[in-house]
Amino acid sequence: MRSGRAQPTIRVAVVTCAAALALGTGMGSAMAQPDPSTAKTDTSTQVTAVTDAPRSADAQQYNDAQNALVKGRYVAGFAALDAVAAAAPDDANVAALQTFYATADADARAQHSARLRTLSPMLADAVDRAIAVIDRAATETIDFAPDTDGPRTAIVVLGLGLNRDGSMAPELVERLRAAVAVAERSPESPIVVTGGNPQSGITEAEAMKNWLIDNEIAADRIHTEATANSTVQNAQRATSLAAEIGAVNLVLATTPSHLRRAISDFEIAGADVIGAATDTPDDLPDLPALAPTARLGMTVDATKILGIPRTY
Image 1 (cartoon, one colour):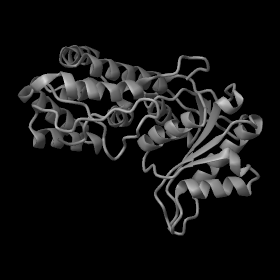
Image 2 (image 1 turned 90 degrees about the vertical axis):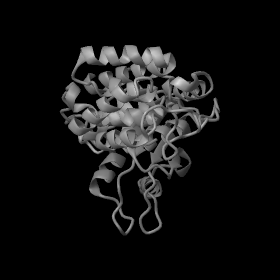
Image 3 (image 1 turned 180 degrees about the vertical axis):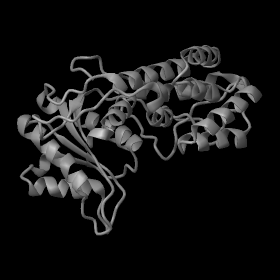
């Protein structure tokens, strides 16, 4: 998350990986495919996913394991995943999940990663990169005063559920105030507001745009992404939109407790996150590093961004 670091290319590489798995791995291995609910077409590399790639794991066992993991029932999920792996040792998606979730056991992670590499070197590379991003996002000091680069730096505000009448919660207003503080320091930077989940006919992005205009941000600086329904989708879709408008790096505006997860998601999705927004520079939040066992939510998000199937 430092300015000047080479911009990640994980998102494009993973999409290409999916196509390669579909076309070249044969009957013995499964394919990592984009989740239809979260996939976002890359503007520079369009790849058609093959939906009928063979998979060796039992669908019900795989789905049960994934269901437990994404709902935070990790003990049950790990046990179910081990059972699936024992029954289907040549399924690359299962090996990828095992590699991801071995957060507290370096030796086990190395073993799973080595097996994954024999099944799909490209997927193994993508998983290794994503794990490195998670490790960095979980531990690095977050820069709340990054050096911006005019129109090449986009300020991204992540949405939050609206009230039933379409009004915004105070927490979302705080995110917007932080974004305005950065926008005032970097007057040429575009602002991207991302969030769907409409209430009373208005999306999170539309509500945020209206607030920004009411607070003297020019409408032509604001770019709306009004379909995302999760942090994963925020990351995928706002990253694509930022690239379309010419931004090469991002400053994120979200709730402090959400920052490490958001930074991880955006960077795995292909963004270069250089820092976070705040309107209280003299009272910065205390964001301690996350232990490996506290990164499971970030790990779930990473599997979705890489396109590892949620269900078989």
